[in-house]
Length: 158
Length: 109
Image (cartoon, rainbow over all chains, first blue to last red; front, side):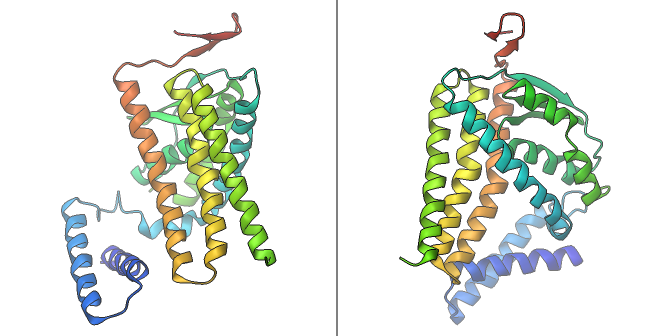
């Protein structure tokens, strides 16, 4: 029930921001599209507790802030590698076994790793992540990184 | 120009720089997987700095809220599409170049 309310509020808010015109006709269309989207989400099973993530946004804010720092730092590192004439890369594959058990947590971790330049998640099958790293340094960094622990602190068992 | 315009211009130029470096990197890197690293410069800092510059131009308005939403959606969709690309390449048997410490150069495994 709480999940339904959160989803409806998020959809209505998105509609209001997108439309920007507040006339009865557009409100009617908005109600219709929110209802249609809600029905589609229900059919796709997106409201199940294991996959629903909208209620986790407040808990993730701190993690996102720390992720922004990581992203900016590795952007600068990769930009320097690209602009160095000798192109000092040493591509490495790394296997990670995150301690996160929940689906939302694993998806968030895989996306965070991909979002950080110099590491891309290639495969996240059966709890083992295959991560492609641009340099050996970035491979060591992601192996020793506490990103999984930070995410588990934020999300718990989700 | 007010100081806000200056900040916005600087952010826009920095964003353009990262998009350019991402493009140069995508051309210089040797294989698909390493090219993906270069293009994630364009996805993250490049687009965020440019959207930030546009937000400063928009001021406190509905446009700024929309740009905010675009930034958030980009941060969720770009890693998913990168995963789809990388995973498809990996599952179809395309193997990355791996660095061989003895030969000090990139070799195919």
